[in-house]
Amino acid sequence: MAGAAGVVAGVAGTVAMAGDAASAPARHDSGAGSAGTPERRGGHHVTRRELRGMWVATVANLDWPSKPGLTAAAQRAELIGYLDEAVDRRLNTVILQVRPTADALWPSPYEPWAQYLTGVQGKDPGWDPLGTAVVEAHARGLELHAWFNPYRVANHTDPSRLVAGHPARLHPDWVLPYGGKLYYNPGIPEVRRFVQDAMLDAVRRYDIDAVHWDDYFYPYPVAGQEFADDAAYAKYGAGFPDRAAWRRDNTDRLVRETAERIKAIKKNVRFGISPFGVWRNASTDPLGSATKAGVQTYDDLHADTRGWIKKGWIDYICPQIYWNIGLAAADYATLVPWWNEVVRGTGVDLFVGEALYKAGDPAQPAAWQDPAELSRHLDLAADHDQVRGHVYFSGKDVVQDPIGAMSRVVADHYRTRARPPRLT
Image (cartoon, rainbow, N blue to C red; front, side, top):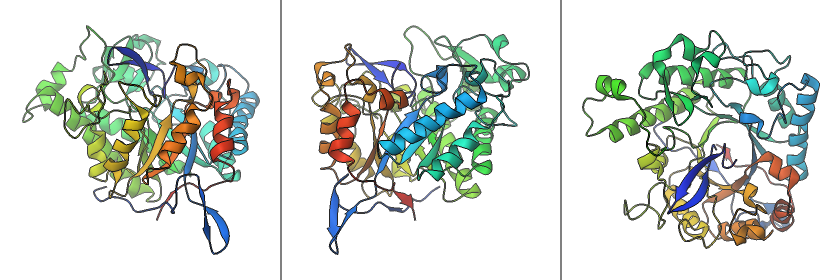
C-alpha cells in the first residue's frame, strides 16, 4: 500500500507508487525565512509558519482503526494516539480520511457509516470519530484537515454488497465498475452535486480547518479496460473537442463548485488537493516538468492541477512527490523547483507530500534505505521560497518509523514548534 491510498502507477517503465492521497487567489500569511529555519527578529528566534502534517488513512484500515470491530473506547484511544504522536514529533496538522469509500466517519444524513469502523457498513460505531478528532486535535494545538475521496464507491464491483439504501444502490445509473472497483461517474451533474453535498455536510457541522482531497478523480488507467461513460458523454459532451476535454471539464466543475460552496459556508475553511506529483511531462507539454512519468494527471486522471492553481480555485496544493533525489524518471530535485514556480504569485500554498512509507522498504531503491533521504528532501525544499511545509504518508509510518527516517527529520528540521500557514 502506498500514496494516500495505495494505487500503483508506472513511471517510465518502472513501478512507482501513486497516492490515494473561488475565482481569485487566496491571500496567505506564510511568514518569511527558509522552511523550518528559525530567523532572528528583534533579538528573538522566530520559526516561520510552515505546515508539518501526516495523513491518517482509514480505507482498508490502512492506519486507523487498526482493524474493524474495535470498541468505541479502543477506536478513540487509537485515534488519540495518533494526535499525541503528531504533538511528540512537533507536527502541527493531521489529515484524517473521513470519507474513504462513499461513506462517512461522522453521522451523515447522506451516506452510511464506514465499514472500517465496525466491520459492517452502515452500523453506528457508538461515537463520532470526526467530531472527536476535531475537538481533540484543537485541544492539542493541531489543525484537523478532513480528507475526502470524491468518487470511489467501493473496492469491489458488486453493488449488492453495499448496505441497503446506499445512494449507489438507489441510483445504479450513477455507478460504473472499473479496475475491480466501483466509482461514481463524474460526468453526471447529479453525481457531482451529490458528492459535494455529502462532503460539505462535514464543513457545516464541524470546525474543520480544511477540506482535503487526494489524487483520485477519474481513476488511474488500468490496461485493457475502458471507463464506460459513453452514455454520459453522449448526453453531456456536446461542444467539446474530445472525451478527454469533456472529462477535464467535469473535474474542473467539481473543483470550482466545491471551492465556491466551501467559502459560502465558512470562508476560513481552506480547500487543499494532494495530486500525483506529475502534472504533465515536458515531452507532452513544454509547460510540464522534466520528467518521464508513466502517469500524467492532466491526461490520465483528467485533472488539471496546474490550472486549478493558476485560476485560484484552491488554497493549497500538496503534490505527492514520492520519489527520491536522483531518480531518473521523476527526480524529487526536479519536481520541487517545478511546483515552486507554478505556485509563485498565485497565493496558493505549496506543501510537499513525502513518501515516508518508502523509508527502509527493501523493495525501494537504495536511496530509501538511507534514513537521511527524507531529511535531504527538506534541505532541498528549504532552498525554494514557495515551499510552505511537508506532509508524511502515512500515520503508521510516523509512529513505527522502522529505520528512523522520521526521527531524523524531526532532529534536523523540527527542533522547535511551528504554526501552520493560515488564510488572512
